[in-house]
Length: 428
Ligand code: PMP
Image (cartoon, rainbow, N blue to C red; front, side, top):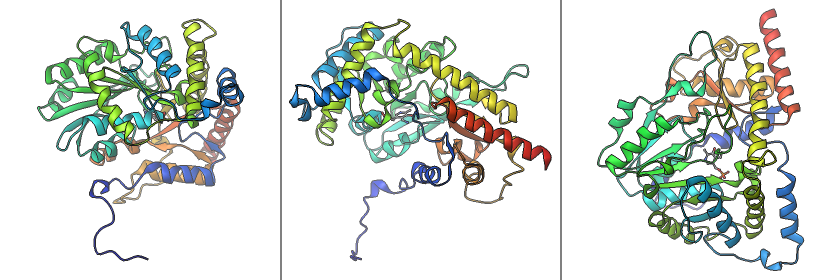
């Protein structure tokens, strides 16, 4: 091994080198019979999308195999601009108000690198998609956490993700002159919470009052259930100029492996994201962008109609959510019914006797439980405390997150495992 007298690792990586996904993806690959862990569908992407990709690949335009415009393949930025004009009710310039990224992941990275400076504070609402924290830190910023607090459900009902709410005074107390941005993720991964217009209004008011930017991760924008409305914070008073909207074709079209994402926002913000993008990945695969553009063209024509994928997918997923809710409720792993996303968080308290606590262990209980479950029952899920900061992790160790974007057979197999487990528990 080469010996160097100085550290090889850049200081900005200190403390962020551990990652939940590396460990749990490996565990799921090794032990799971049913994988409801990482968030991706196990059903096929829609035919119209895969057919568009095949056409792009073998069609007459060989230039689709070459570089395209760095900030987004022209047909894709054009159709995204048309789509978001409809959603936001404002004119958009495809060249300056839209940028295509390598998944929503790179969109997030561009936002933090472009907008957050050394010493800036960034407010993150807990629980959060775990990469926000290391990305803020890599940009030199300081994450400031504010938790969604669970309120007990009314009269014996199952808890809903809507029962998890911000305390307005606590939220307000996190804003200061050091605050540069807040990260909003609605619908929220992992809880499935869909922030109401009123809740978004409170956040918007604070952003305007303190001149704070909003990084709005809306990758699950179409996955909203029970007639709930996905409200875009950028459409609220005073917010367009300070908001970057982030989206993902992976979530939108059930094709997470394509890694096509985008940002939509004012040029005054996007111009800086373009600098990061230009000097890092440059652009995302042309052919995937072409196929996603065709997918959006189809959806633009079918907008709001029953045949639209954006209407059908949530309908199917709502049914799957209900199956998983029933399976979990029947065995006493109390589900928190999500209003959106394809995730569901469940309370494991009644299963604690199977995996006893080890007092003073460094490892949160839910990590141990999820590891035990995949190894002993073959069912993979993700511990909820992975979506909390180090400081607050230990307050939320009684929950695990399941992904229900799965074939009916997968959900049935999960149900079988849970039922069998329940029977073994009651006979022991
Ligand atoms: N944001 C959230 C909230 C997510 O859950 C994910 C994917 N799990 C992403 C961003 C990243 O999306 P992509 O796969 O398009 O990079």
